[in-house]
Length: 450
Length: 167
Ligand SMILES: Cc1cc2nc3c(=O)[nH]c(=O)nc-3n(C[C@H](O)[C@H](O)[C@H](O)COP(=O)(O)O)c2cc1C
Ligand code: SF4
Ligand code: FES
Image 1 (cartoon, rainbow over the protein chains, first blue to last red):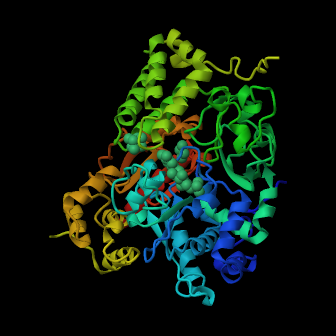
Image 2 (image 1 turned 90 degrees about the horizontal axis):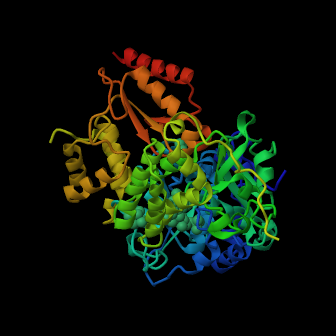
Image 3 (image 1 turned 90 degrees about the vertical axis):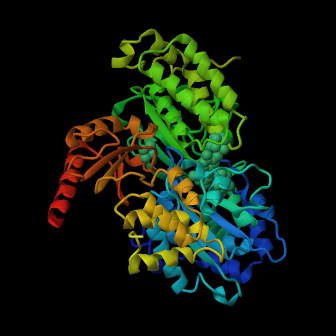
């Protein structure tokens, strides 16, 4: 059993309620932070912990906090990003649904450290029942003196508000989220200015992911140094992984980042192996935006070394032979899955979610979907593969926000690693409509140059 | 204007607006549009959007801009129960296509259509954050997960009974 810092109490009956959460030691970290620590020392512990943002980009949380501007007389805000719309990702939902008070405790400590008297949770609109759970928890926490005015007699006021979005992946991007929170379309802003200087209502704002903010609780409880001892290298602490696709045990798992990808997939404690006795073909290890890897490159790096479930190891080899930790959305594809079709559904997703501000993203995502549709339906030509490659390359790096890159990478990786499957589709127009390319050589041991 | 919040809805409206600082009431637009949609029959006619604009003291165009951007707002009438079935990658590899076809057959409608009796609308949507519990769909404020043909049958029957009980 690995270390559990976030989900340790997830199975305690009634843990969703304040009373049980408190009885199990909840809000002790908040008490410690507000009564015994200074703002500086809290930020220092978070820095020492090495905690990296769990929303996808992996930016060090303590460093982000230290950037927040503190102009005289201007309110500051903490915003919790609970938009969670990256395909494959459903870990924040689990945390909020089962441990709402853990998130509130993390928000309270973080709000105190950042000087946010009004903190917002921006939750995707579809998680309506989760929003209700959070609102109920806020009411309980307020009744018990953990939110509201003059908390624990410290003079610190803090209210947490739940704000429901209305269906838009782009609102997970922090500046689009801020626009949306201001009651506008979710069009990302051009940076700079960064939210830490001018964010919500042009006030200094920090946006952090749900899991990042929940992790502040164990960090304060155990101290940043102790937290940093868990994991490996710059992958400190624990990470929530939402595993889905063709595995025996889909679900949300907390891992310490020393476990190998192979163990994570095959051990009974986690995914429990590939479903229906099938073979592993490919995996998108960090949410739909990160590069897909064939089985052989997933389990071992191009150097032939074991690949582990952490930031560094998953990205070993760069985009040529590696992928990314991303949001922790771990999608497994078995030998029966068609890479062309899978890529098509993702391309459709990004076309649907593009906010439309930048031409390369708005037009390019549509073109990629159309060409993939053409190939998938047995009407493709070999030149279409190069055309796809060309389009994705022209989107990447040429847009206001990273959604453009996020749309380009899955297509690029699919072609990079599965080009022969695309070609097979094109050369076997009829056969490809009734059968799949299958596993082929994708799980074969990789040739490691001496 | 004929569309108006009743007292209870008005109380909820005030609660939503109170979350934001003085003068920043436009921030309540998304939550208020949810409230309007829930209050006025599951969709947002222009009249409802204009009403929201008056309440929030903003221009109607500011409301239209937002209502047309977000996928959860219905700009056309929908059935009593909207089946929003996820079709994105993780659900697709877990069998969502068969479920979608089955629902189409059972309801006799295509995605985007409403049954003649006005009870069901079928919509195909993108990832709803339930990928590990696929195939799945959202119906109103809840998720229906781990769908099988049998489960779909039971869900359809359940909603038909609800409607019959109301009539
Ligand atoms: C298109 C797009 C979608 C995103 N969606 C989310 C999301 O749903 N949740 C999230 O926490 N971060 C999301 N992010 C990342 C945020 O912009 C931001 O980096 C993050 O919330 C910062 O929090 P963290 O440092 O704690 O990870 C998204 C980014 C992009 C470009
Ligand atoms: S990259 Fe796409 S989503 Fe991002 S701002 Fe440009 S058009 Fe909008
Ligand atoms: S892909 Fe269907 S819920 Fe995520």
